[in-house]
Length: 194
Image 1 (cartoon, rainbow, N blue to C red):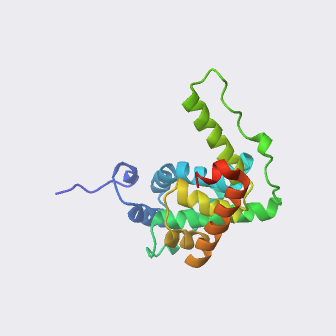
Image 2 (image 1 turned 120 degrees about the vertical axis):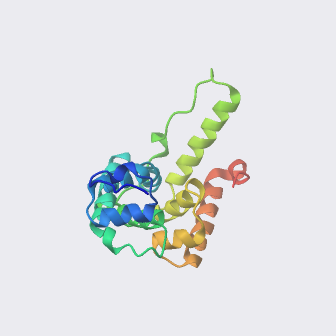
Image 3 (image 1 turned 30 degrees about the vertical axis):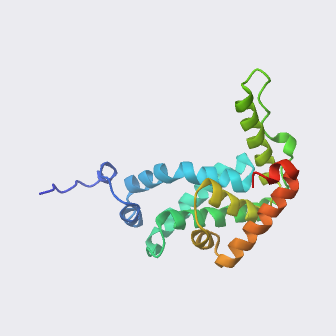
């Protein structure tokens, strides 16, 4: 027979995300800390990709988690907790974009290519990654979000539609235009990769 768990020890128990969010809804700080630790790295990566301004990423991540803390009681389990959190992060990112009137980043600000002393394969991968990052940076935030959620977070169209709050057809349209824009920006060599 399992022993009752003393108050404040919820962080030591392995539980699923829905149970964890339920505890957050009851204002359990340990559960919130566990939720933050579980999702902050993924949300930070997503926000970096969408915002492209590293100075805003932590601010928007904090805003996202604050909303999750305040609105945990509204989660109705009609989607996954990850979908719910990514949707909050997306909305907070779009608010930050509107507030800041962010210009498109300058591709010259991208990380440097590796030196000639690195092995050719590694150098080529770094160059390709830098080129893809620079290309993605030139997309609109809405198109970047779809690319990020699809290729870097493995979400399908239906889940992305829930996250960004639009119909599945709109997600597919955004993906089509994002890929087409990337092919144009990458030229012939990069188009083959897409």
